[in-house]
Image (cartoon, rainbow, N blue to C red; front, side, top):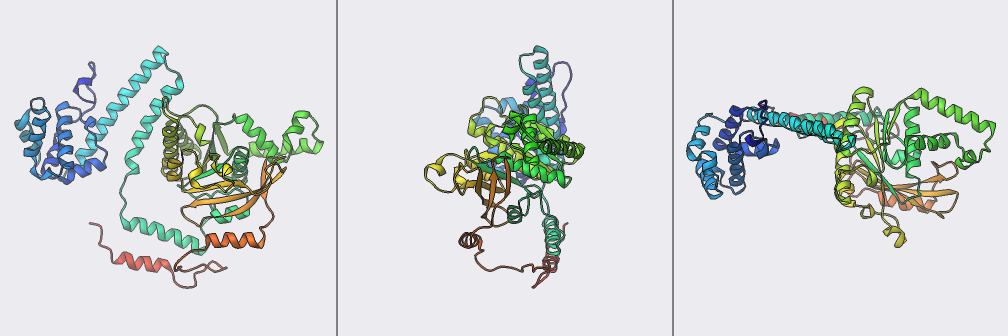
Amino acid sequence: MNESNIDPIRVQPHNIEAEEGLLACCLLDPSVIDLCIESQIEPGNFYRTAHEEIYLGLLAIHEAGQSKEGEIALLGWLRKNGKEEATGGISAILAIQDRVETSFQAQFFAQEVAEKAMLRKIIRESRVAIEDAYEQTVDGVQITSRLAKLVDLAGAASESECKPVAQTLDEAVEQIQRELSGKEEMGICFGLKDLDERMQGLRPATQTVLAARPGMGKTSLVQLATEWCEQNEKTVLIFSFEMTGSQFDYRYICMRARIDCRRIREGIISAQNREDIARVVKETKAAGNRWIVDGEVDVHQMRAIARRMHHKHGLDLVIVDYLQIAGRTKGMKSEEAVSEISAGTKHMTKELNIPSLVLAQINRESEKENRKPRLSDLRESGAIEQNADNVIFLHPAGDIDDPILRVEAIIAKCRYGAIGSCFVQFNKQFTRYELAARQSESEMADNEAEQAPSGPTGSRRDTKGTSREFDPYDAFKAMQSRLPKDS
């Protein structure tokens, strides 16, 4: 916020010395401008309007490759754009340049400027939210969405932190060791052996998109994953935009108890059915490890809710049902909204280091062309495909009207594994996914051919989980010993 927006009653947070120090460092050392860009310092972050204009000029001459000319190039830009008088001209530039002798404190100055700008933004957004609440011209959801954006702003800086190669190598080696020794636990599972083995579960900090045409039981497969989580003491947060929480649990009870929903509505269930319903309700309540949000919330609110729930309960999985109808910022076009939600949920999974399972619909092209779905069939596919670590398609492998439908689960994208497919079956009576009969020999051969790696392979684990060729930990350590020490 610049001087024209200063609070007339109270002086808002600012640090003029840090602003002048940062601008002086940019004049002395052009590489500091790269630091500012990396730290997401924007012209509007400066409190004083003159400083904002000078920083705009510094960015412009840096982009034009004139940074080495320093104050001369800056003065020329200010004159050309009619800003010389407003900024104080060469005398002001020289005064700023004399503030520091080296650019040693540039990082500190940048942090100070960014922090004070964030505080001013919090004040501004909070004031607008308070006025909206008093005037009651905007609903509460929009007000909380405005405030939730501030939480995303506060977390943005931590996401861009640079890590030295020694740290990331150590983390990678530790994971390799765990996997070779068999100590690495499989991620969150669906409870379907073939699919889980191919995916190795849903891993932390990954986003998995589960996509299909309507009626293929996407929500049913999600409910199977929540059943697995309940049985394995994993905590789940669900954002349900398609149905209410009670509707979700109605279907969940029927799925787990293996009861046809129609029989309940007709009132013709057996005594055993009643016992099964009571058992499922009792077990689910006792587990108490699932929360559901069924209101209209946008992606900023979703991230804020997930952070709070993760802090209080330690989340293991976040589910979004489903992407194309999730809450969106007002006035956004469909494609922009899907892009924002897809990117927001991906950032959330990385920030909280937990997996997310996002449901999505595909267009009708695969049906029209009588073929299996591919990544380009995802609606608004550019953003969804780009942000997803894994993509699973559910494709009917039999007559769509069959009461027990044979389904091919196509792993079309798998960032940390092989693509391919396996078969499951959807029991429509109980809205439950189950293991399908094993593929025929020809199907298995086709699937193996699709997944066969090309080129040379490294060490493989044998049936006992030990490496037959070498221990990669020693190889990585040897490589690390040749790296320069962190100064």
